[in-house]
Length: 486
Image (cartoon, rainbow, N blue to C red):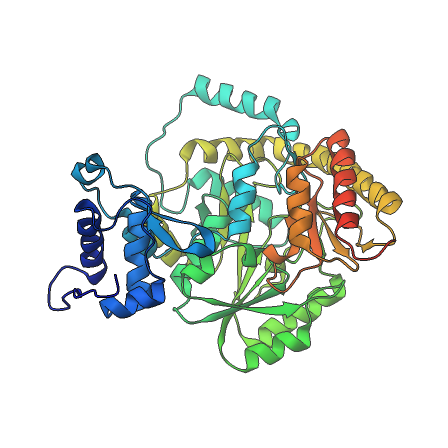
């Protein structure tokens, strides 16, 4: 092995890693590298071939994916398969190369793990930021669908900005909140997530930075990262964002915008205070920066009057407002909207047409009917009462079982309680303990890479009994991973 006299030819059109793959296959097919043969370490092999480690790694990974090579932990790479049928089969496209070269980054490992497990029926989902199917207004939506069928409807392509009827209903809805918007200032999208995606790729150049509260929902996404945009975290307290830090970041001139969930934040559940709201809006005006207002949770208020969106104080048109029914009606309809300056909406509408040619017409018809009939507000009123009781139950359990080794703030709305743990040894072990015992949680580092001592708990999806049992298992997980006796 140590007298290799072959090197890939850099003058050929064939990639170096592909030449290495064919060389390995020849060695195996002629019997020189037999079944179980141990290849030299990658560093040594790269030197033999005169290539960098990444080129060699690509070749070995492809051969491993084909079942020709295998790995044994620290022992390295070995010949796993030398059957003639393997080498005679037609070669498929090099899908690994395409997968690695895609422009959108994959979800983080923890996010993929949670998504993979969330659809298991035997798991208690304290992780899920979604309404329980029990809370969906089936009677209302069934009546709407029956009326649509009886009256006839078209499901063809509609206006690029969304149906005129739904946008008219949203104009009336927001007028009651102090927001004056024209039809041309509203774009209907397929949920708030698409809105954020459109904004990130349509308005900001690669290399720009966007500030946001930390912890923040954006850190659990790769949309901004895939768009070449950097996130700048700004810490928060009980009333809202640290305005002095926000000003310092934006005065350095490197940030393009600010993203905020002002009411019942995901993941912390915090609410922007009225005093801080006034101060923050004045700060935005002075900085002259666009603000992306994620208004997904504002209607889920429990202990106070309905708060007004930031857009209601936006005389200078610097707020890009994002709304959605995923948390207030149902996620499956996939309807959201953007309200902003007219030219901004025109640009984002053009971009959306390139992506999907418009949001589902049927979903828009359903939402418009619910808004016009008053059933949307009726459902919201019932939903607030239900979720308030769920929040109170989770808070009561935490007070009885978690006081002494955890702290939290009782949220005044939304879905979430942000649980901060004391003296925790390893939050990854807590996550795995819970998963192995049938409970899913969202660890805090999903929302801030530096946050290793918090958990986002959701009370919107689980039943009362599931909540009690799930929190009991979480308590066991925390205590078994805490280095001192409490």
